[in-house]
Each structure stands twice: as structure tokens, then as C-alpha cells.
Image 1 (spheres, one colour):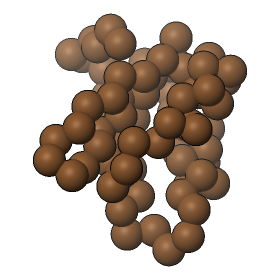
Image 2 (cartoon, helix red, strand yellow; image 1 turned 90 degrees about the vertical axis):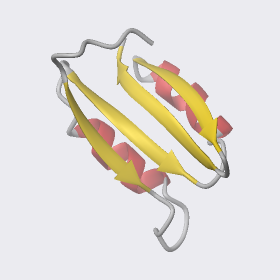
Image 3 (cartoon, rainbow, N blue to C red; image 1 turned 90 degrees about the horizontal axis):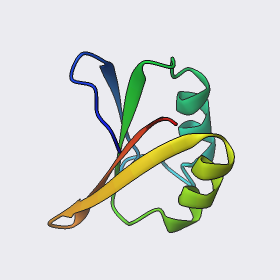
Image 4 (cartoon, one colour; image 1 turned 60 degrees about the vertical axis):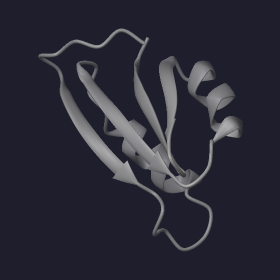
Length: 76
């Protein structure tokens, strides 16, 4: 994922969301401007999300740090 150091970044930490975080993630993506990035913090690798991101025109890069996944998402 190309990262523009001048672009804004939002953070969505879904570790404390009660229930599936999919709707929260989609809401955050709907509000994401073309020059913004979203950093998703999750307790697991959100593999099912990757296909949805690609279908909606987003690129992503995932990394695991200890037991937490960080997924950096931006418009393609």
C-alpha cells in the first residue's frame, strides 16, 4: 500500500466492539475521504474483509504485532 505522509489517518480499534465489527468498519470506510487512510486495529486477521475492500476500490496492507493486527486501508 502506498502511503502519503501528508495524508490524514483515522484509527478504528474494533477489539472492544461487542459483536461483529463489519458494520462499524463499513461506516468508517464510507466516511473516508480520498486522501485519508484508515488504520484498523483488530484482535485477529480480518481475512473476509480483504475481498470486500478490493471490491469497493480500497487497497490494504496488514501486519501482525504480537497478538494484534493492524490493517492500513486507503482508496486505490
